[in-house]
Image (cartoon, rainbow, N blue to C red; front, side):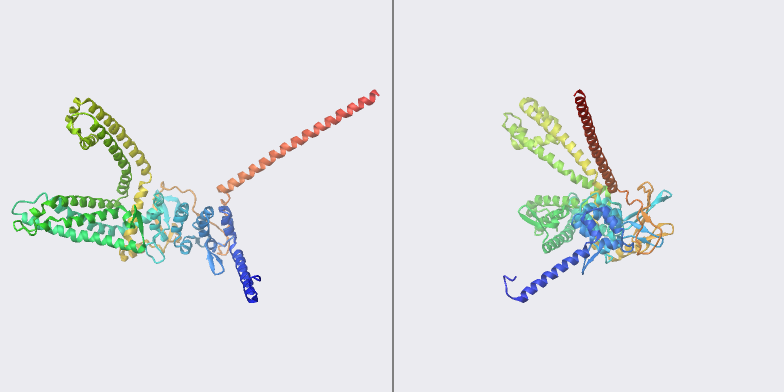
Length: 611
């Protein structure tokens, strides 16, 4: 600084700034380097348990969740997750969610954890998914004793259900977005999802789908029923009027509803800049889901139907009945209109698959069926390859069978052979063309015997791989629908549901033993989750919140301590073996030296005697 300026004030200001920075750093180091932070930096669960063992029982949770450094606070739990000290983070979560009791009160860190970190589930799902299992396990208490074959179980799911405003928590959404089929099958998550679905979201979802089912029935009547049964001449005019009315309802209510829905979703994704690259262009994010794509195709089919509507072209026909759809002006549009109607019908029933969420078993079957479709697509791709190859080969062959005259005809007949549509009469006609018969036999061996059995084997392996997680995938689907339906649920119904749970009341641990609030008590079969150890750690002695918890009896019997003791025993054994070998070598050398001295003295004595 002296070389750059001659201003004494600038030099003094720079010196003062460096002094201030050094004091700040020293303060941060002194106040932030607690024994808990040291244990986190070493990523040792054992050291962390010893560190928090020094804390008063009333402030034990705060030692693991809040360290004040000047005007800023640091969370040891979040810090351990950020730096990857997952062993220490797991020890913190297990310690916080362990129920301890003295003679006056129970201590449980669930409320403190979620009040300090409302988004703890989101952070763990993103940065440390392995910690979700111990976190959810800590929200369950099971009694060691049973009564009439039933085990008392408390699920402390208050913060999985409610946020700080007593609205529906985003925990289910975060867990569902994690896309882990095993995590959503955890008993705590399953209980929350099933309760919200059965008592709140089901009616809202059913009401929305009831309108869809009604529009589907209205669409079926004019497109698949009345067009095949126009009635006699006396009732034909009535049929035309009903047909026109139902089609107007479809175009105005169904097509209008889907069009508004797609405009709304597109505007939302544009505002949020939520786009997904598809080829060389970008599409709104909602179209990445099959429901969005199917509904968009349905809307497009309905628009094409409106453009090609035969009734509109027959309105000016003076010779026909009113609202008639058969006239010379509309004749050229009948087939394209029927194709669009067929596509719309298929899209309607495709969207109807979403109703499988009513049953977890049916939903699991639908999801497994969708996941094995890729194997069927590979089989069809292989069949198409062999069809083209053999069709070209047969077309190059000199033969007189009209069914196999050119490449398109041969390909069509080979497809019929693959799908069992080739008649026995056509097989008999192959007898007069030996070379053609040999090629057909080779095709049958390749596709029906080899490819079809390969498809069966692939479907079997794919089903076995998917079957293990199919219930989890079904629950993922239900969780997603619950999260999408809850914003539309009436607040009165949600308030009644929350009030019926009585989450502010304490859950019993036994007859007359009132525990901690925030839970839902259920009774499970005694054989479902066998528990032989009391999950509550009870201590006698002082009940002062300023006193430390006594050292737990089983605190040193964990696997880490066992490995430490084993390592020490091995080190002691190695030292003893090394010391024993050194002693033997030294002892052997001294005895050999003594013998050499005796021999030399004996020789010298014999020489003196001879002299």
